[in-house]
Every structure is written in C-alpha cells, then in structure tokens.
Image: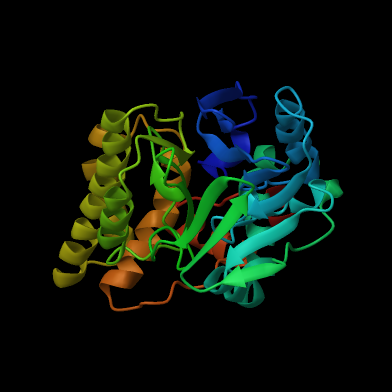
Length: 326
C-alpha cells in the first residue's frame, strides 16, 4: 500500500436528504459524514457542519428546498475537523458544543485539522474556504434544551465513545435522534480518539432515549426502531470485538504490528465490507492497543504520527509528507 487508503478514495457520493418527521431531515452521503436539520417555528438548527464552508453550502441548498427560515444554530457532535470546519458557512449561526469538545479543540484541534485534511482529501473539497478552527459560542456540561418556538430540542453530552465529548441531539416528542459518530450504520467506526471501555455504556444511554428514527454519523438514515437498534448493536459489536482482541493481544505480550495483523484477519470477514474499513483500522488498532495497555487519554494524532503509524503497520513507505497533505 503506497499511502493512506483514503487518499485514493476520490469518487463523489450520492447525497440523500430524507424527511424523518415534519421539519426534520437527515443529510446522508453513502458513508460520508452526515448532517441533520431541525426546522423550528422561526429558525433552523443544523447538526454537524460538514468539513468545509463550500461543502456546507450544499447542506444549505437542501435546506432551501424546504424552508427559507434562517439557520441560527449549529450543534457540533464532537471536535473532529470533518464535522466542524464548515461552520463558518452558516453565517450568523451560533455554534453549540459540549464543554469537553471545546477543551479538545483547545488541546488538539489544530493537529486534528492538519492530519484529517492529509488523510482524506476528498472530504475537504474547497478546503481553501476554511478560515481556521471552529470555536463554539455556547458550551454546556451535560445537557441543554433549546426551544425553537414550540419545538423542544435536547442537546445531550451522551458520554465518551467516539471521542470524550460526544453529543447527540434528541427530539423527545418526535422520538428522532441525531447521534453523531456514537453510532454508525454500514460504516466502519473511526476509533482513533475513542474510549472503548465507555462506549457500551454510552450506547446504552442512547438506547434508553427510545429513538424511533436516527441519523448516524455515517450511513443512511434509520427510519424505524428495528433499524435504530441494528445501528446501535452493530456499532457495539464492532467496537467490542476490536477491544476484546486488543486486551487479548496485550495479555499475550504481542506487539502492535502482530496485533494489527491478527485484528485485520479477525475483523475483515465480519466488517470488511463496511465503508472506510481499510482507512480506519490502523487508527482503530493503535488506539485500542493503547487503551488495553492502560492509556485512558488518546494520544494526539498529528500528520507526522499518522505517517509513522501507517509505515509501521502497513510495512511500506507511505506517500511523502507533501503528497499526504495534498
């Protein structure tokens, strides 16, 4: 393999904009990062901003097919660049995030921005339109409620899973949830910044909300309770299987390279058809191995660390740094 699996993934994905309920929409793209749309009495709330202002413009264009109300709020499900750097495209909107997500932007936002753009160039189309890091205007600790007129929108820091700051948007009356990357469907969870030990409990908390429709971080909108459960259970199975393998590898005294080979052999038959499997697994293996060895706080990914990890696990020279940052 000559470079990150994702650098050769350049094909456009088909966008779907589906109504989950009156004034509620899922913006999904065949395994690319999703957004959610909540239309209130006088304004619109968007869940996850997309990777660039240029890409946010497509979300806004879809919104304009159903309402002319202004977008006044953007909720960030977590800090990853691919979710947040498009926020400036929603001119005049207040940006909302958990306090933990803001702290992670302070600690590692710039490194994450640099490494993500290098890893997955297709997801950052129009990256020259990014003015810099996205900073929330409003932060909250565990839960906050917005009233968009008569519509109740609960914004919940659901627990550590995909990151330490993971946030879901829950509409209790409509039983619709925008889950961010706590849940994926037919898409490989990216676990490079994950908390594997906490992820099952976070999914249990999400399950207890009782969503009947759910937009995952990646994958199609889930339009009934059975599909919602399939998304939650599939995410739990993937992360649980991998973390179990990591704990076995550490107990056996295996090194990271041995664990990577064993994990790929064990996971590919069950999950290899999920999108971005080849891209995510080196990062997932690295983080699960660290956590199994007792490292609670994920190491910061930098562009340089990405390359070193890829070289070590794939056993071949990756693309040169200048090419990786394309």
